[in-house]
Image 1 (cartoon, rainbow, N blue to C red):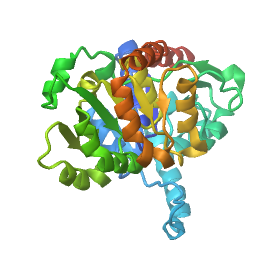
Image 2 (cartoon, rainbow, N blue to C red):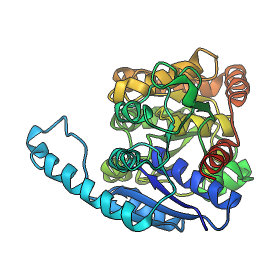
Image 3 (cartoon, one colour):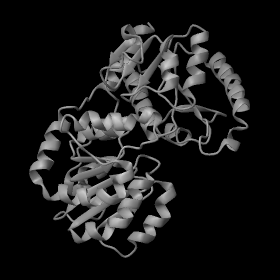
Image 4 (cartoon, rainbow, N blue to C red):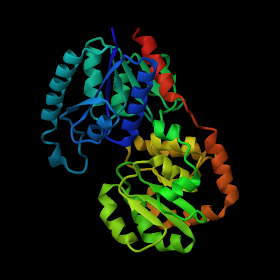
Length: 363
């Protein structure tokens, strides 16, 4: 009998891309396996998962809105409805196991699976665990973590440190710097700064780049700037008629962007960190300070303490980010030090480790 697995979660690229990487690794280990994703309606996974060739069911679920309490009125109804939807999905699909990767849909699916005695697995990518994962961890079969030292959040005997799965396109990329620069129509004689604020963009980074764009161009730099949807129109207006800047809301072929980049400016989500270790780039992190338990600052500080990255506070980005990028672009020795140290932290087989451990447990 072919095994049946549910993978639940999403919301951002940081949850979706590792989930797809785990699904691909499971398929590679067991080609007959049947995989169903469960996500939140209206979120990014509803588009990205089918593009990767997998079926997905959407739940009517949303998180607590901290900025507008009025928007939370319908939340209890959505939660109740999502539990009924989960009940239907699980009873129809009859999974042998459920995997949670974080995001709104993870909790109701794993909670229901645990109540039914179905083996559950959690992947916690950050160095500071989210509240729902901590709750689910008590009854989980196994907890896969991106970093060491997670015993303060989970039962030590259930933890397996695997690292974070990286999307195949980046793992297997053989794109040269020249090919990357050609892809973005940029000049191979100039230093290139890649600016990424995560899959949804980053306001403070965008505003800092907007403000200091001319300074960067005058310093002889060129830019690949992923703005996220909210800032796309403003950025496109800002760069109109300027040479040496590629700006868009989303970079679909990230392997070309990494290949073209000499320096990266980025948020410090766990998946971004994992990818940057693999592609060995000098990076300036601007951690998102409102991430749960400020986990992005924890993620970035781990690398900074190993001389593998630099950090700029979100609140200081407007004043310091452009200046520090220009300084780093002129300091070849510092670039080499950061490159060498970040490369030591790369993990290439996290997805395979996770897939093998799951299949071992659900024989």
